[in-house]
Length: 231
Image (tube, rainbow, N blue to C red):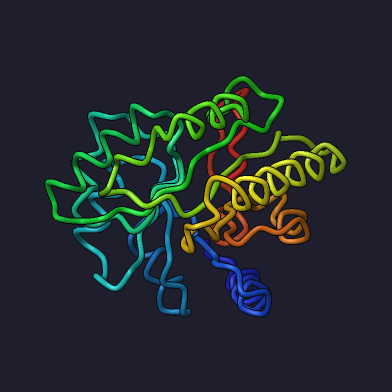
C-alpha cells in the first residue's frame, strides 16, 4: 500500500534540497506505480531487467526509468533503447557492454560508477583502488556512448548510524577527489547516488544528489527468511 503522506514528504524534502527522488518500484504492481506517478513522482528505479522492460512497455512513456540493481552484461541490450540512468556499473567489462549497446541504439547512456563502501560482502562495486587504477590508464575514455555522471554506493545494512555516516562521508570525499582530478573537465560529473529508505536522511546530510527510496513509499516488501531488503 502506497504511503501517501511519506511520499508527499519525500517529494517536498528532495525538492527543497534539489535532490532527485527515485521511487524504487521493484515487485510493485502497475497500479501502485500509477498511484505514485499520479501524485507527481515521475522517476522510478528497478532492480531486475525483465521487470523493468515489462513496466516500461505498459506504463506512461514520460516516466524516467533507472536501473539500480546488479546488471549482467547479457541483459544490457534489453534496456539500452530506453533506460535513463544505470546506477550500478561495477566493472569495466560492464561499461564496455553498455557502450556497445548504446552505440547500436544511437544513444549516449548516462551511468554511475558503483563503489563498494559497505562491510557486507553481498554488496557490489569497484574498490577505490581499482577505480583509480582504471582512471589512471584512461580505461573509460574510449567509450564514447556512455557518459559517466557520478558515483553510487550502498551503505552497510545496520542500525549503527556512525557506520553509515562514515561510509557516506567516505564516498562523498572520493567523489570530490575524482571530480577535482579525473573529471575536472567533465561538467556532467555531478551526481552522487546514496541513501535508501532506512538511511536517506543521513545520505542527504552527507551530500547525496539522488536517493533511492522504496519501502518508505510503497510499504514493506515481503522478506524471505534470513534476507534483508533495505531498498
